[in-house]
Image 1 (cartoon, rainbow, N blue to C red):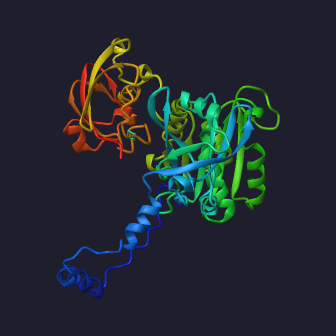
Image 2: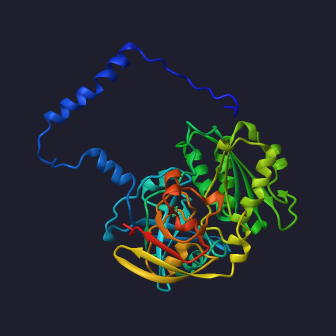
Length: 407
Ligand code: FES
């Protein structure tokens, strides 16, 4: 499928389809009238299926910890029967789980992409891979505290960073840096297992050869894939004869793949996104063929386009109404409103922490916030009626906010 030539087959409507459509409403009315007035005893099968596919919470236990590199570990997680989870929700390669923690008296959540395949979830385990020094203090907390037998709380599978046959090209061009490799491991495993019908050309940027996560594993997946998986390592911090040196450039992408006949998936740290955005712009790819994995909260808000720099050192008063409780707390201009509320141990709802999912949607009663354009996933109506996503909103003045309670 080329970017300019979508091959869509449209089946014309027949007279029978029109008749069926015309009778739809009368048929439904008849069924409703015939139904008993008492509530159904049995849960409808569709509801049971939806609950198993999209559980609110999953109670998990760490069953294995593997060192991938000096700074990265993979954690295998199995259902915690004792706490009420007997099987794992299946997911699409590229999705993440949002984990809940209580660290130093603060309730926080963090999303981690699943690095295992959906087939492995059916067998009874998930895997996530964490880099100690990448991202945030929560990764360090996992590194320091998760051991065999540790109990953890996760959401159901979430996120939109997956290959969708109707939308994406069959040729996936993956651009990864650091722990951004994890969703691609899930995709590569699924391709090798035969459960995902796509080809993957993966560019993986690392600082040094010894920092490459899943180095041997990707070699094996590549060899077993019959040409469907190709991995190009790009090393930036040392000269390596065996691999490409420097950064992932548009020239390198064109050397090993055809970006005009593929869907580009990008996953890595925030700093890599800023750099790759320029390379993607130079290639002139259409927006719908470029998919960015969310990377969590903006770390340096003063670097965001349009941020009023004179505000950066300010501290504001934040009045939070949540589930019948009101608290007045301090909020630094440098931190998101969500982080400020979590520091006050109020456990607000959140999953993606990137302004996209809407889980943290709250009503801003008073005050001004700065929202980076790329992280503003609000609906038009929400913008108009004063709703914000606290995970992607930064205080510019004293604020008053109504936050829904986490379920
Ligand atoms: S947590 Fe997803 S929008 Fe805030």
